[in-house]
Amino acid sequence: MYKHYRYDGSDKLVLAHEPTDDTQYAKDRASAEKKMAHNLAKINEMQMKLYAEKKEGVIFVFQAMDAAGKDGTIRAVLSCLSPHGVNERPFKAPSSDELAHDFLWRAAKAVPAKGDIAIFNRSHYEDVLIGKVKQLYLHQAKADRIDPDDIISNRYKDIVNFESYLYHNSVRIVKIFLHLSKEEQARRFLSRIEEPDKNWKFSASDYEERKYWKEYQKAFEDCINHTAVKEAPWYVVPADHKWYMRYIVSEIIKETLQDMKPKYPEVTDERRAEFAGYQQELLKELKK
Image (cartoon, rainbow, N blue to C red):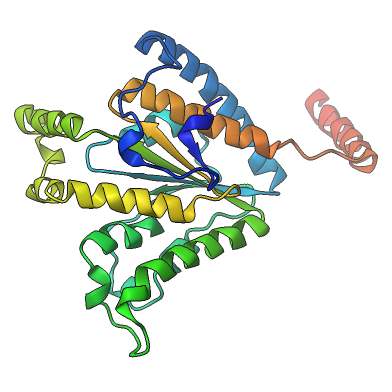
């Protein structure tokens, strides 16, 4: 249904051509919220089956510019899930321990078990986004044989191989980029400054990062074009209207789970016979 938001390597993304304010699949906020409520019920139902079946895991990656609404979208769309079998992992600036390992180490540690869902709030892609824009890799310890000019291109390849490895081992990964316009980001920053209960959301670093807007847009475009494959697609979701963005994200998650076709494990005739015995014993206890 949302094929033109999906990138799987068959088409090249030109981020400047992707709308940030599209609302074509919901005529207004009320209709979007109604559709999303239906989706959340289905997502909850399928998560319970996924957890019970324990055959396949899934990672939902959220990447975006500041103020695009990652946290709010994760809360709005995924709070319907049972805490059992779900883990949200925020990827902040790497610790000294994480920097002492390979760049995928912290992502590998957060890979979910079969039957579980992992939510990556930012992710291993930070190393080809802010890592690329700020050239952080130049200041990180590395072997003398490593050519700095090859680091980003090698990381793209390593990410594709890592995600392919996960797919071949029963873990899917779906990557969602919340595509916000520079003008809408400015409005949201102003809201954080002008409304006292939102002041805590704003920091000087947010404004400083905004100065690198063009560089970040290029970094997102490059990383999506280098790492979008059929088994691990990217979705570029319009983010200027939060109500629409959240609805589309709910559709992506619902359709991903539907494609996984989770179902409750079948009970064998032998187990049913055992249940009958337990049933009789429990009924006897209640009659005493």
